Image (cartoon, rainbow, N blue to C red; front, side):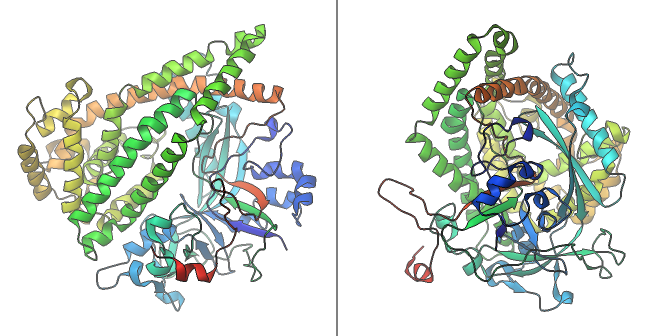
Length: 613
């Protein structure tokens, strides 16, 4: 029997239009591409018709679902869903208290009535259709540049989404492939009532902790169960005790036989993002500056949270999900930095770019089409890196709670002045349920003491930047200048956190209906901050979009050159992962992590007993 495993996968795919001498044992494929590979897949061990995998509304693909950031699968006729333990962590912690710590002790609902509402905003997405819309997105935009090009793309995408979402209960999104060379519209059923059914205790679900994360062998019981609920008429609905379990058309059956070495395996899921085709300058900057800097800041956040919130306290429980995410990527960055340091990655990338440039130079038509592309792309990349030391700090400031909450609320009030079609994505009417849920989630993810400590750390780092890199409006709000006074900053933040009402759920929700004038008259210190920063925020956003618009015109040209170059050599080009549905195939095998070492494909109970982490 074939093994159809749904999991989070971070690989690559290739478009059918680019399929030249490709092999199914590498890359991650869009489902509609699989019928063309049916003979090869059958030879590898696929026992079902490859065409059935391309039909998203039929078994098995209609059982492979997304949580909006994680992959999951239907595994029963009553809407039972299996996913990774860490993918349910937000809901586990949302329902936890110091007296009833579900993360530590685990949770099992023995009946439907005992199942717990997932964290606000939780969703289950069932992909219904994927349609190429490249022409509808980019047609007629040849003369637009910069911010105008960015905005025109956005307008076209919003129009396609609006047409797609005329049927209630569905969510649509336009995905960019190959940096904007192709676009696809994805339509998904959006189930809004999600409930926690089971999660193992942390001693199982997080066995091995951060030490084992990203490593092999691993013995973690990394799974949890949700259940999807809908109204009695079978339509998506908000949480209600009157709702009933969703009955999927199909569900996956777990084989008690497991797998053996050499077995064929098919993996379907929603991989996050990869950047396989970045230039040499981007690779160098990413591994020698961005990853080390991000690793350091994440580890600093971890230290601050652990030092501010006592283990087992309600404050710590609120931040356990964030801690897990911070540690997850800090570990990932560490491994990537180490691999980069002992690999020829950068030299290989530079060599590949030289080969590409030489290939372009040998043909007049190629010179006319791609001759300036590499130089232009490098110039834009360099422009984007000019303020990166400041931008990464501002990014981590935005990962705190109170400042970005006030900014989002004030932005909403301003966006509501516009017609819905002219609003920024994220602030349209289609986004309001999500927006409200984001305000509700804060209650179980925020503690003033921790938030203040994190914000203090990042503002101190911001204050240490050269004056030319800082933002005048931000300096003014926090009294940052040539003679930075840390004690003064601490007093300012003490006052802001003491006086704000945004930590209260009812107060936050009340701001959803307030006008710009109401915000302008507010005495709440965080609201006043948002008002003071708004014009500057919009200027910074416009500048960022202008650069993105330039890149959105050049990056597809670069990818066209890569595709043509590889095609000339009989090599395929795989599109980067972008959170859309993909399929990969392979066989169960071990691997050699280093010279002289052999990792087997299975772990055993004896390994758990022997392990000391």
